Image (cartoon, rainbow, N blue to C red):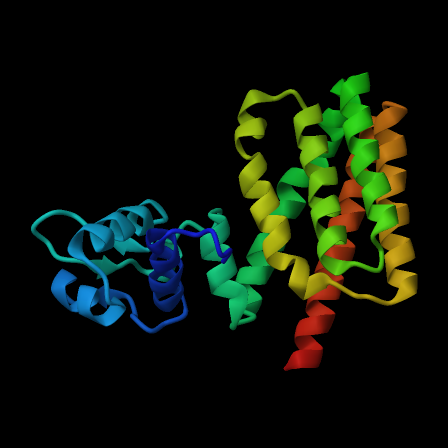
Length: 234
């Protein structure tokens, strides 16, 4: 959370995190009045918070029925906040595996389409993000943002209007599992930059089958790192 967050924003994060991390299990929530007392806020603010959390599908707030925490399977895991809350203190192997499976399903196809359709402007954006990755191999946060920007630029290069609507969700998936796949060893960083550089060159040279293959290989290695880190933490 940033210092510029409003009281409502801060409460969205506090209440949402509490729900996702199990303080309030699926089922009936305390009354609105009890929640206001617990979080030291007004009913107007709490109602705004509840509306937002309902859009994330972690709360059912239908009128006259009371408030309910939705079953975990119904939460919107494509929402960046829900993903961050879910993985903040609980390295759920099943959720991480599901995120990687989704990436393995869509990202190779996205890379193929980018190789078919990327314009010179798209290539400039992809290369710019790649250069940022190269410049920040010793800065974890900056490297992550550059990595995400690289893949967002590839999404934009598909020129598929529906896929473009998923750009935020795809970035949320990548950001959510970054902590669970990050390795700071120089050898790994060099390989990661090379993988992205090879993918950029393949898109630039308009080789769709190879772009799809390289993207698939990157996701496979991401999955391997995630399994290794989870096994070592067990």
